[in-house]
Length: 249
Ligand code: 13P
Image 1: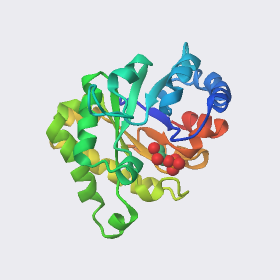
Image 2: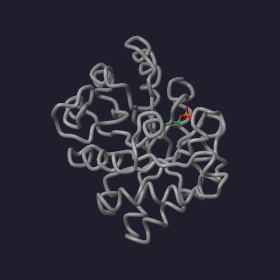
Image 3: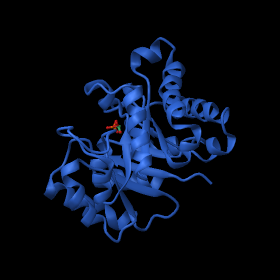
């Protein structure tokens, strides 16, 4: 059985009080849910306080990006070991907002992925096409290139300790979700690509869908055979929404 996972990506939202209220509202419900893992990927300044709030619960901590470097003169950057100091288990790498707004490319994303794994963090590797790319019919080509750089540099074996998140850029924060079939088709494409290199790893790989997942559409997305959970933005900030999505998985 593949591991199922729902991870909240808080992006640049929250503060000490809001985070506490949100977690107090969701943790009692999530603790009672069997059969899946749950995580919250929070802004760096709140890793410490959220680590404390998550203690003794089954919800795991993650970050939203990480430096590819171990240490050194990289002003403003945060290393894998720093994240480990605060009990992080996961780190998102290659989110489309990092790629588009902060100049990350397939090479830097692969380097971050490798750095995360070297330090025993589980990378949640994001891939996905823009609307323009989908309309041009090159979705698979884009995803293939995004994944290829990682499997070439890190090896297909590395996917044993990674999660992939398919996040079509046109569905992020837009309220426009991919249909379950559209998402399933890309998930199958990803799994087939990995199958060509290693059937077992492909079979066991957790592939999340992200992009306007809400309480109202989570069940039908998660019912698809190759969708193993979700990476949730906006709805992870609303307790009832996030709880319902976690229940749906
Ligand atoms: P939304 O759920 O807000 O569309 O964001 C998805 C996302 O980017 C998760 O990483």
